[in-house]
Amino acid sequence: MTQKVFKEKYPIFELFIDKNETTCKTVDDVISYFKEKIDAHPVAVYIATFDHYAHTTSLPEGNVNENIKAAKNIVFCFGKELPTPEVMAVRPRSIGVSDMGDKFVVIFMEAPNPQANEAMEAWSKALKNA
Image 1 (cartoon, rainbow, N blue to C red):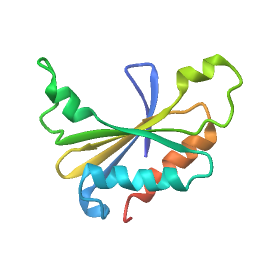
Image 2: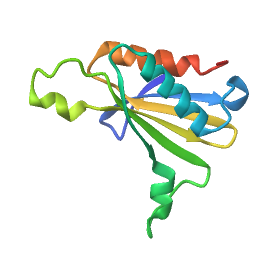
Image 3: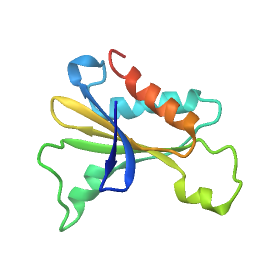
């Protein structure tokens, strides 16, 4: 898993998973895997799944990289505290999954909660050979 900064300001985690490294065959399989992890977590709660590919391709001026075959986000929240209104700016969490033909790209923005990052990183890494 690689940590990097996207567009010079957004800290993200990115993992490439060759399709032969996982039992997941589609983006929906990967999203289902993450939903199981979210549902089993004592704090996390599932919110929604967003089909970013379908949305973008439906727009008259939508533009999708030709190498992306499917792309969805699973949206959820780890929030167990609401100490200030500012927390709302960094919640909920989202993990993006893109099908690049021969591999999946799993990507998420760094959370201010270290335990949330640890969980998302562990879930992502466990996709290999899962």
